[in-house]
Length: 198
Image 1 (cartoon, rainbow, N blue to C red):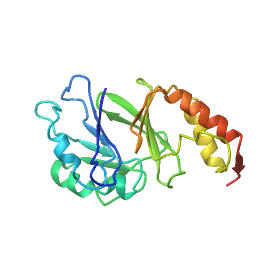
Image 2 (tube, rainbow, N blue to C red):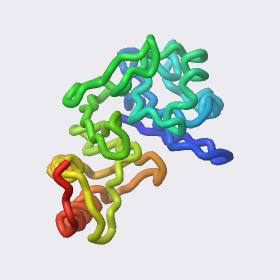
Image 3 (tube, rainbow, N blue to C red):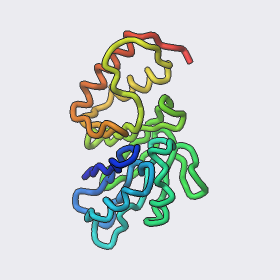
């Protein structure tokens, strides 16, 4: 699996991540995780070799529907006509994700993990074979104890911390290499804080 970060640095936007197979085979599914605020990532996508006879983007998976992650969807749809996956229906042409669902991305599989904290439709995408997590805007960098956290968030972080995650591709911080250590620290800090039973 190859992961290529894309971002428009001229405006407020998230990272979009293009996932390709290691060898750009015909059966690999060129996948874009999030699309950014506008369609400006198209210019970057056009410069990438994604395989002979293949669309640059065959499917889009949204980590959630906020404008900085999904605003560029109309431009991506017009250019590449990809399949669209989101936890809530974005438009008549999108497919709804479910917790535990598995999708092929590049030449690997991603498991959908529903984490309704940053927004009710937020998901993380976990590739077990690579130890990779696409976390969107899920707040997983909590560096000190304090504050209050909903029980569902604590349960979600416990679930993520139990997985073998080596690298994390975040919505705004880019790549985090030592993701396992960060998740353990975050879990310790939220356990040292107040948990709300909601």
